[in-house]
Image 1 (cartoon, rainbow, N blue to C red):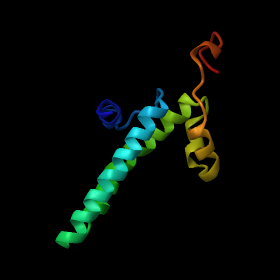
Image 2 (image 1 turned 180 degrees about the horizontal axis):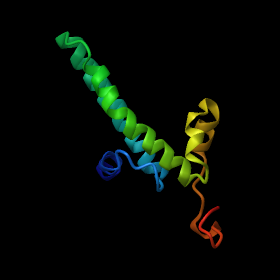
Image 3 (image 1 turned 30 degrees about the vertical axis):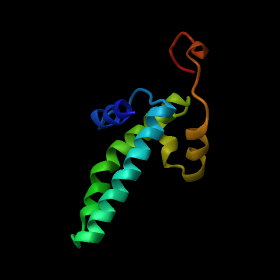
Image 4 (image 1 turned 90 degrees about the horizontal axis):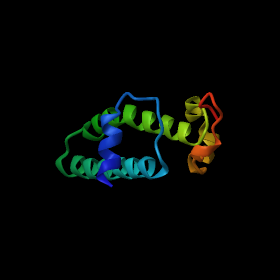
Length: 106
């Protein structure tokens, strides 16, 4: 589980390649847990902006993981900006490796 999270964080600006469903959902679960923990700490301590800083730091890796997930689903990474359609694509199955043509595209 931590391999998926550390893999996504090390690919901070990597918008190429693919992210499996496991890597994608593990990373998003991790970001949810981090947001809840930092929000809780912010609420208890009264330090304003801690959760905003956390969101700012995790925005780029979240987008890059989503784009790589789109690639794994056989779609363009640009579909990540389409609000409803991207959720359908993210939940779709990955493209099997044997379904590629000679040029490497689907």
